[in-house]
Image (cartoon, rainbow, N blue to C red; front, side, top):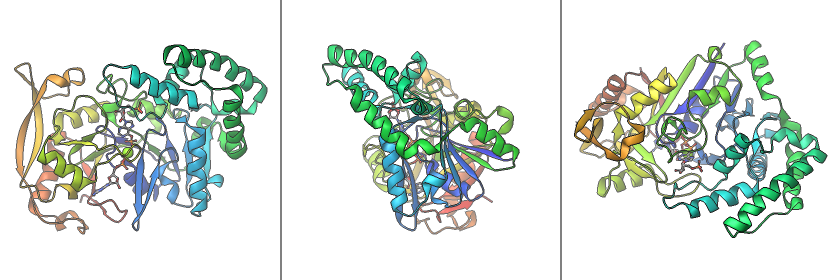
Length: 422
Ligand code: GDP
Ligand code: IMO
Ligand code: MG
């Protein structure tokens, strides 16, 4: 049995997709388990860049099966465009993509409501405006539309008509926005049925059967630990559980099926959108990290906020997820910094703490340790021994203070810029 989970250990964009692409070589099935097209997952192969929002990042390996699990919220129009563009590039996605019949759909009114809620808030979250929150809310309210609903068009039409009465009322009366007609929404659903109908299955059953048949499964998290709706910096979070619990709920696999949980972490920290970020580097240092790291959102293009590595954040990510190892990405971005800061703990209201206080982070002042940096470009390094001494020290320092083995090191965006930490 082999079932690996790859989870973001910070605020998203840690380089999960690159790691998924790396681990896909030794897997048979790659599964997205939560989130939706708020995710922007980048894989670079021989200078060609692919950004996936819904289709699992293992899709570039032509013999692998990809699954969109029941915990994902699927925007049909976006999924179709991603699918069509991959097929155009010669990837036979139609033959090896499965979509859970229990996955909820994101329809235009979800996106309009996401935008309206952001406008309404005094303090903006800075969502991706992809309809994520409104769609998960509908799931909880039990008025969501699921992928499998397209197999009974008569019932679906009645459902849409009912839901639209509510949504249009809200859009028109509260937010003074345009409304949607039944036909408009039904046309999207009909097209979804036509293009994707053949891919919709009971993925929970499929995954358990696959495990029984000895197939190796790789679960792809979106977002990251600190954006988790339960464990993150609420309300500045996403509306799903990127952490290990979400991986189980969003696939139907159970705890005994999982044998590895890999946390992906950058060698520094970034965050997009609003919310507390104690180690944020403002001014020249932050700007240098942003430029060196190309830190602009893969989904929205927004500049990412950048800062220093945060040990308590990583320790908490490890505890919550049961991380069995770490993949350390973007180490190359730190080249050229004379000193590299690492937060060892915080001072909150005059008291020193060494854990991640998700709910009082605004008052947390990081306590830094400064490590010596290195000047060399490390993108061509193929093993740990090739790295400058201070880069090796940095890796060992993080590993020992987080208390989790760093198994993979990434020194550039391309597939080839990856090696095991031996
Ligand atoms: P994800 O959402 O976690 O999959 O990450 P994103 O794709 O949103 O953002 C990570 C960005 O960093 C992408 O542009 C990757 O191509 C890039 N990247 C990943 N690993 C490395 C690395 O080790 N070095 C550099 N320089 N870039 C990397
Ligand atoms: P990947 O999978 C980074 C952030 C948004 C916002 C908050 C809520 O590429 O790592 P939402 O649209 O989910 O309601 O927005 O979450 N966010 C991400 N930040 N990476 C992501 O995905 C993100 N998905 C959502 O910027 O602050
Ligand atoms: Mg991303």
